[in-house]
Image 1 (cartoon, rainbow over the protein chains, first blue to last red):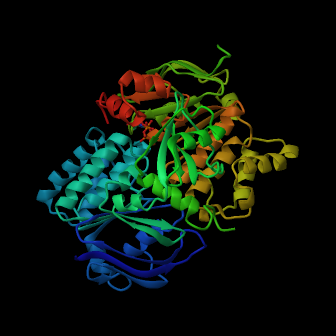
Image 2: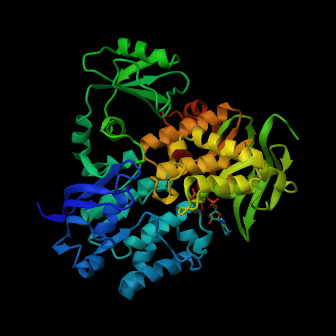
Image 3: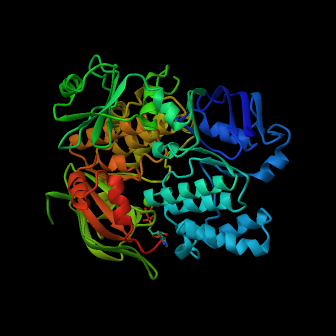
Length: 313
Length: 246
Ligand SMILES: Nc1ncnc2c1ncn2[C@@H]1O[C@H](COP(=O)(O)OP(=O)(O)OP(=O)(O)O)[C@@H](O)[C@H]1O
Ligand SMILES: [Mg+2]
């Protein structure tokens, strides 16, 4: 399959955090490709390298046929990039910001009006289009920045946590739109702290402390979880502290909304697991086998994936 | 004035010109309660929170926070609350310790207590080993823990948290909620906004704001029962459909 992005042995280290320590992967053309991992796993550094804003200290990265180190002109003309900390012109109105983005990207006048209106409708920002950007709510600004990155309908979208601060309804609309763009051949590389979003990707890369610790479709990633997964429910919300050791012989035990999830060795029976859980959470009442989801996989990687989930001291 | 409520408002309203961002809300939050304030982008959460913190003058309505009038006693309110804003409020170039020292000054923590309070706040947030580190180089989830330490160093009665877990990974979010829970168990009232609906399940009560008005409120269990769904995400999707504006 044709590759839209390929990365080989990329390493980049500045100040210890958010470093990349030898990352290789490729993104098939036309796919919706997700990146997940702990805070400081190196996700944003990777985006900056692909957007040609940062030269990798080691390794090679290519966007379409171009190398990020010396062919940044064609790359910048092809991608739409939304950085995690974006900036908008706070004194311009919503419409003026979009218009400005369209103009610097050389969008033809005739198309422009229609594209901007489509984006306003999708983001539900139409009623606020004459409001000054500085006076928007946090999530509304986020949506506007997203629209600006999409003005050109770029062939390759690089989105670094685009939906942080965006409400559940708009997140759903946004992912419908990404799916639609994929249908039209757009390649999207997107990072997210929302694990339900990772499940909507064709392929997911799991980064941990600057290294790839998992890659595959959401389904195949979920199959990598060891043991069997159980959901524990009570008449009230259940809770265990994030740092408690799971009662032996459970592999892990953590909250999932108002319920608990327990990862247990294969072969252990429900009632036996429930009894163990009740030792640390007496209000636990019912247990059912559960289907693993990407959130379970990431939590497992963050706890058990080697190294500590802590900044380097 | 009621002593049983940490926060109580009647018809609290904020208009910007012809636009009513917060529309006559009646809020009652009990002492030590974890109160989730939920709603779509632009629903009015931050605006309401800023009025309660005494940072924004209401257009109409009345209310008390920690027993003080939100119209006339804002400076008294300021010293009794902690506020973690949706925007990043730390100095990235300063060390963790320097950031903590700055808020100690801001809240006029007595000289003799400063050292102890900083150590205590750092310990509670689990950042005691990071004091000499430059703030900006810490992973985001840890910077948010520092923000939490900064917001609680002066032992506030009420803690206002505006989307504290924005871009925080799933493990750090759970750790952060353990901090919130511990704070509530010490008797601090928590007023928190989030767009993560699994976190809304951790609240004692959740309030849904739609177009500046309260559309529904209850314990997670009550809300799910009332809407006959199994998650608060579904409650959100149902309630948000009532929205008319942006
Ligand atoms: N100073 C202002 N002037 C004009 N309009 C304003 C001002 N401040 C806020 N608004 C408007 O009030 C509405 C509510 O904003 P607010 O920030 O309270 O929303 P929110 O619920 O916190 O949203 P989010 O989830 O995106 O943070 C928005 O439509 C916003 O544009
Ligand atoms: Mg807000």
